[in-house]
Image (cartoon, rainbow, N blue to C red; front, side, top):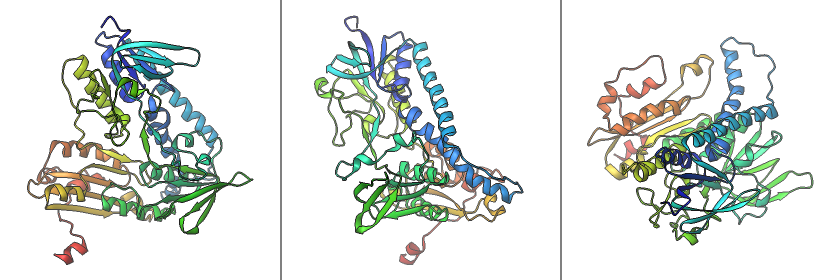
Length: 464
């Protein structure tokens, strides 16, 4: 490989790219990583990490009210948005620095700038002060994804996305959030919890498309209890900016909403723009993502891609595991594929969602007869103060094998619980093995091993 500047060139210093670069560099390979913004990628810099900090911040208002029911006198409380932003940015800078340091310790070169292919083995890196060309024997594309701004909506130039939501100079008094996926629902909960007048607008009949139907219905009920305004089955026709800076959302059926900001969270798309993939001969799939095989290799033999740019499963831990599998296969001579089945996921909404495996509908399509175990209950913390929030826990079981093929939770600590439940689902444990596990009392998680009665919806019971 001496005829090239590097043995491996990685485009993008996000979670997947950094993991792959570090592991490759630790073999003694000459590795370089190009990053156009900040090391750490979407998750660390403008995604799940700062968003989780915002979730924590927004939950305190409700916790203060709960505390009163437990005998606490909280007095007057207030929220300082600029102070929170400063603390959040300081922590993000620290984490980004750790990612940078780890790359350097592994022996990789970090090139700050935008990289694009000039030919299959040559890349141009355009930095702030200089532009340089480098050659590489192997290339890994790990550029992630970017928020979508629908160009067909008149006035779309006035909206913000999740990326700008992390840096608003002032906390808005009112906000319209467009979308029904996990990003939209999460940010709706965040800003609602911080006291913002939020309206969530979605064109579909219910939120969280793709999740289990019981999860979707339960979430809708809980959001209603919390007073979050949700407008379903409607969409933007145009967005008007008034002279006073306020935005008017003109929705279908003549409805209008006035707000300080309009945030579009209608999806993300693979970041392939200006990469010069045509010059490298790299093909995209029908979704506009880099097409790869099970080993993350593109149609070009020496070029691979991992993470959101491939649009397989846009989750940070998945990108990390794909990056690791790439390094294991290519630099450690241990052919490795990441198994995308039974990956746990979470929605850090309020209340949060955790799930792993198949939805009820997916399981019925795959296995035929399935058994459902479902419970809804008020946790102890809620009952003590007369709260109305209810948790949902649901197990989907393949009747023929008795294996638990899906687990779904809505409620406090759901994401924390689902991480361990995922081990059981991934291992293929049966419902009898779940039942044989002794409950830990008093916890909400004990419900997962005490579910005994099969759940039959009234409409299905009547049909049978």
